[in-house]
Length: 137
Image 1 (spheres, helix red, strand yellow):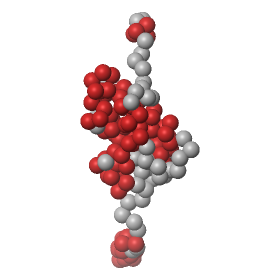
Image 2 (tube, rainbow, N blue to C red):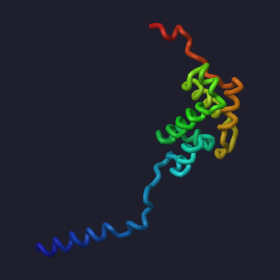
Image 3 (tube, one colour):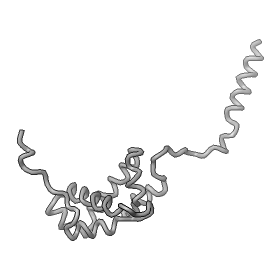
Image 4 (spheres, rainbow, N blue to C red):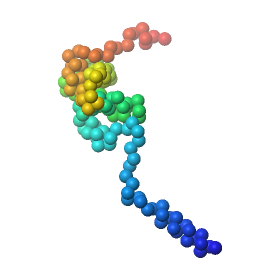
């Protein structure tokens, strides 16, 4: 009986390993950005697409990708004066607002970064500061 149990355990262990080489290394989760594309966007935030922006509600990784890109764009030299006048946070939010507006009616592959930075630099899509009355209890 003991040999039978040991034999069955051995066969089970071998069978469990079958087909491992055929499985993909990592399965993507619905709504997550493609890993290679995410690396591209991290290196070049202008590579962010309207599809990336549209996928934000589907997964936190998609949200984080867009947030990293919008703030990387806010740190672009073309927006230094805006950051000095407004804060990096408000400029980043302004870039996001510009990108979402520019994506309306566009293909998912459209990259709105350059146009968004140019628009914010020109004073369009600027997020306004909170009224001082909001700061009082």
